[in-house]
Image (cartoon, rainbow, N blue to C red; front, side, top):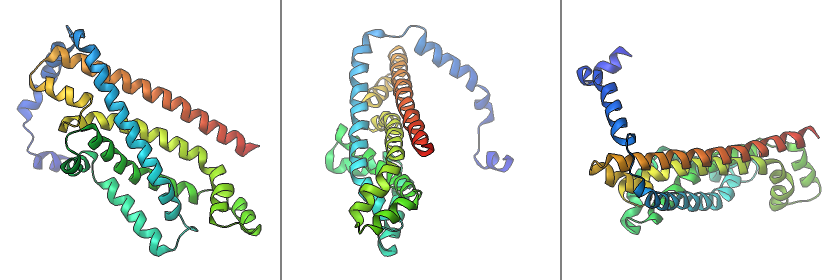
Length: 244
C-alpha cells in the first residue's frame, strides 16, 4: 500500500485540502439550485434512459442466441470458446472507448451511446447467459432428448422454463447498469444528461449542476428500486417453483 501511494506521486499537501474543497463545491451546487433548468434536465434524462433502454434491448436480442451457442452441449468447442473469448474481450473495453470508436461512423448522437451500451451488454449478458444455461437441471434435458427432441426443443422445453427467471433478472440488472453508463457517455457529447452536465460544469454554472445531479441521483435510485423489486419477485417466484 505504501509503495503504491509513493509510486502514484500523490500531492499530499493538496490532498489535505480536499475536504474543504468538497464542502465548498457542495455549497456552490446545492445552496441555491437553479430550478429553472429542471424541465431541460428531465428531458435530457429521458434521452439517457431511452439510450440505455435501446442499448439493453439490442444487447438482449444479440446475446441470447449467442449465450446458448457458448454453453456446453449446444455447440462444439471450436465454436463455443471463441464466443467466450469474444464476451471477455467486450467486457474488458469500457463503454466510453466503444462509443469513441462507433462515433466515427454514427457521429455525436444518442444512437452512438445506445450502440456502445448494446455492445457492452452483449459481453455481460452473453457470459451470464451461458453460465445460467449450463447451470440448469439436466433431468428435463434428458427427458426431451429421450422423446426425440432436437436443439430447439431442448431450449424451448428443457432450458428456458428453468433459466428464464435468471435471464429476466440479468436483463433488468444490465438495464440499471446502462442507465448509469449512459450518463457517463454523455461526457463525450452523444447527448443525454451527461452532455448537459459537462456543458454546465465547463461554464462553472454550479447551481445548475446541482439540479442536474439531483435529477440524476433521483432517477437512478428510482430505476434501481423498481428494477430491484421486480428482480426480487422473479427470484422468489423461481424459488417457489423449485420447492413445488
